[in-house]
Length: 351
Image (cartoon, rainbow, N blue to C red):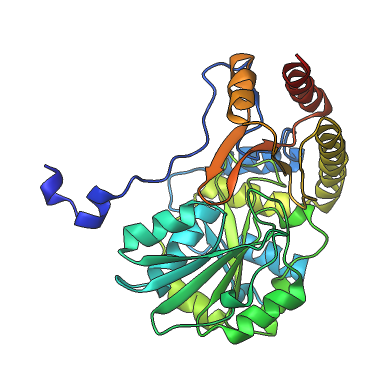
């Protein structure tokens, strides 16, 4: 029956999400989730929305969230598009701007879903390797006649490193196509690019509530772009791509600034603890501005460390990038989870 499937779909491998544990006892540090419970205001909003009733379709444009984002960043609500997680938004962006045979640009190494979205579209992926210091070469600036969209995660995954706002604005102004700055981890960084959208209409900023807001299980994201571009993307999204419970929860989460400040403080403190301990036992760890660290070694393979952790009930993400090398991406957990992870790594290395 595969002969009935589009040729490019049959040929592609497909995106593989991070491993999900089979037992609740496992320590899950492999998919950059937040280890803490979401704001209590989120749960209250979900209960209220459920009690109100779910018989009717939800607001198709998630007005409550658009208004919450607009208030937070002092922007026009018409410049906000909401989605079923940021992956939904990335899909909408790719479908809106990239046609079959055209080109989508991304840095390397980075989030592998971008390449999958290009494959689904029948488009080409153009990978521009980072420099060894995780900066971008000038090649990322230049256009070609097939280039229709560029993705730039900032902070990047798996490195957690960032490109400065000024550099991003230069890239956006020089490219002949839209530049999507994927800010999935921006709440943990020192700066963000939402205010740059008003300076360059080709710039689009994408956000998720999965990481900083402890809502990975809810599936909600939003992007900020020129209202003219949002109007076009509205034609591509599913009619009701965000359900009533997630809309209510997302609006409540974004409004609870005090919870976000405190959660960020805890995550950053534990990340620093993780970084220093991993460096102390011989790992190379670049400064991360996300809620995870990228850990590599030049003296030994790291896959056996990943396997040892897994055997002992701790999941981290092992990644191997051809031409770049492999490493362990370790999400920030609680202090207890983080110490347990590093203790096991240290024991194995010192054995």
